[in-house]
Image 1 (cartoon, rainbow, N blue to C red):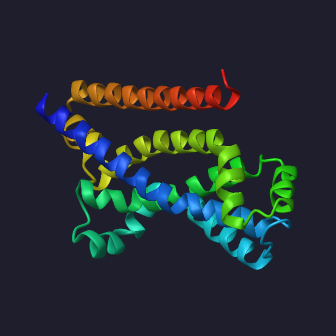
Image 2: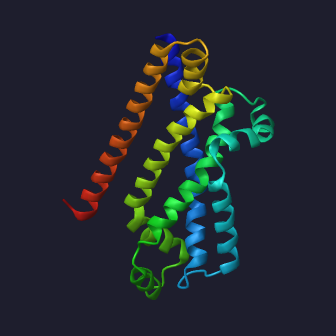
Image 3: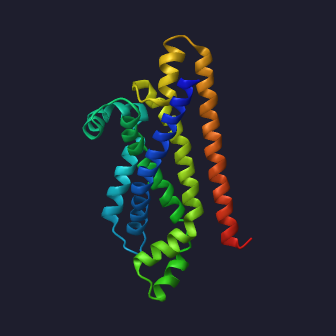
Amino acid sequence: MDLLLSATVETIIMVFAALGISTLIGLPLGIVVVLTATPHLHLNKYISRFLNWIINITRSIPFVILLIVLIPLTRLITGTAIGTTAAIVPLSIAAIPFVARQTEAALKEVDLRLIETAQAMGATTPQIVCNVLLGEARTGILAGITITAVNLISYSAMAGVIGGGGLGDLAVRYGYQRFRPDIMAQTIVILVLLVQGTQLFGDFIINRMQKVKTGN
């Protein structure tokens, strides 16, 4: 039970630390992609294409390969290539393009007429971004962040293959290498509960935001 508890805490730390970092970077990145691809705002096809190219390349690399490729960078940043802290680096880098894409998709759903109206009223680009784009797309963005959190839980289990800590590491070292199917089953159950709990919490917040938006 002590092992399961500590591994669960490590997984939660890895997931939400990586989620926070990827949101802080991926959200502005998604906004810039939309701004540079929208004629009504700051159209710049070269920047837009470059950012899309970077995002697509990062998303196309399987996470297990990304874990190995980023070992030198992880060691440079954290001083080690194994453990919970080290796993946050590849988890964050893997999630940044995903958050950016989810943000871009949500922002593109905003009616362009709202942007035109705001511009006609003299709104600046920061005002349009904060009050129009983010204001209208906040539920879609939150849904994307929730999906990212769920994916990070799965990624954190993969990180255990190379000693990343958490439930994945526990499943490999004790469940697989020591032939303990009971521990393997327990880690699977906890991972499922974490995924379900994260999704339910995200759905709850989204529903509350939608009710506030509609005034119900």
